[in-house]
Length: 143
Ligand SMILES: [Zn+2]
Image 1 (cartoon, helix red, strand yellow):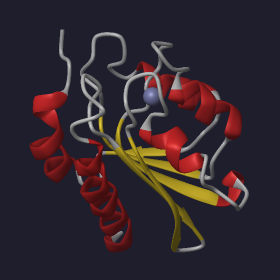
Image 2 (cartoon, rainbow, N blue to C red; image 1 turned 90 degrees about the vertical axis):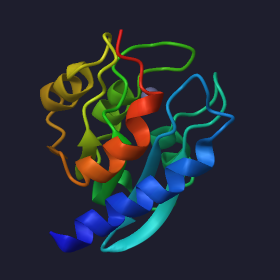
Image 3 (cartoon, protein in one colour; image 1 turned 30 degrees about the vertical axis):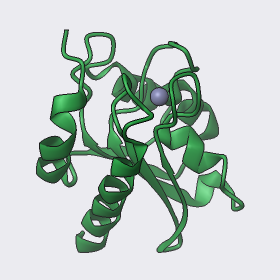
């Protein structure tokens, strides 16, 4: 859907605000949509602080079960300096998660998607992938 691409491109635009403070984490953006309207946005905070998804969720004032999340990168599957975003989403159960691209990080690579799937959280992968990849790829850890 055209609208969904527009929401993802908005998340992409917002993600650039994460730089430079998010480093060495990748600059990820998240937009939360409720009944067709953007109700919260987030981007990767400095290390040890919220990732994009959790930053956006922290600003929500409507039930997340009624919301769609648009996030530029696969939610992290592992606990680093912060808890795993995929596990948090698995617990909170948003209505749908749109993800632009898989995270090539050796500790993610689809593991975040598996966590969502096992929890019964519906997601769509690949929306806006080319645009997101053009911006994000050079910041991603691949080995
Ligand atoms: Zn995360």
